[in-house]
Image (cartoon, rainbow, N blue to C red; front, side):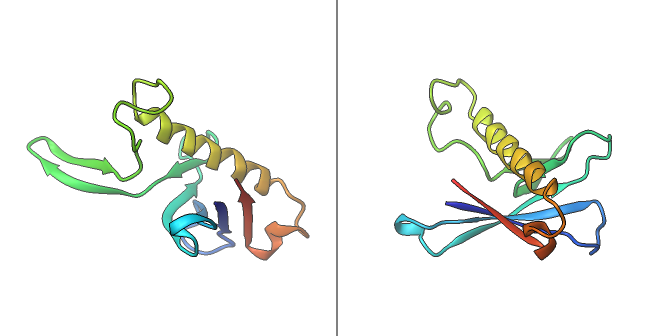
Length: 119
């Protein structure tokens, strides 16, 4: 699996820092990519925020969101009681890798508008 960051270079919206694609290199998913994740500048001034695909649905109290990224195992993975912890780790990994790429000198991969990290 390889994570590709498509850096936003002056395009709208300005607060969007990068699109994130997950490219599969092995197994039955080889040759496919998962799109829909993105890195955004935080409105609160914190570090970058990672958004993953979700779907909205209406309830009596308003709109709620159903995250499409979640644990494939019942009750979480590795003894964790909450499947949301796995998604949180994924977001943190994407955020940290983006920070590394964002700090590259201009002449390296960042200048091309596309960077990737392997896993």
